[in-house]
Length: 153
Image 1 (spheres, rainbow, N blue to C red):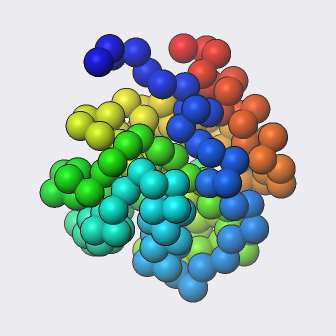
Image 2 (image 1 turned 90 degrees about the vertical axis):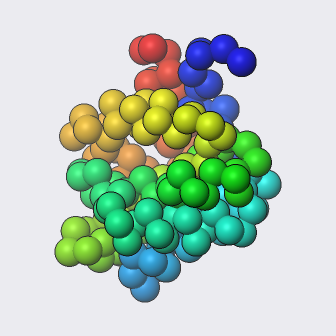
């Protein structure tokens, strides 16, 4: 397998974008991200527990109203393929005292999650791009933001 990074847009199915999600709290939001990954066929149910475990040891809140929930190394066996899901919470979610309006769930084989996290971080740490993602109301806007990042690589 090559080290070439897969464009983010190829890992995010249109059905994996929910721009009108609502959650009762952090764990509910993580379970929803996990359920969306499960629906893509990228993970087995055990990975959702690994996502919650990860969150209990290290917060996946990255700033700019965004969290990137993903599983622990122990959860790797429950990953069948690489995938992203994007949930937007217009009303926000209390994420350990931080207000999160976008959660991007990640599943990746091997060490693929590290490359995905760094690709996402380059988008999400730019306040304008993060703001655009937080206010996205169409799947096309989400793809445009992620595609712009793919083209810059």
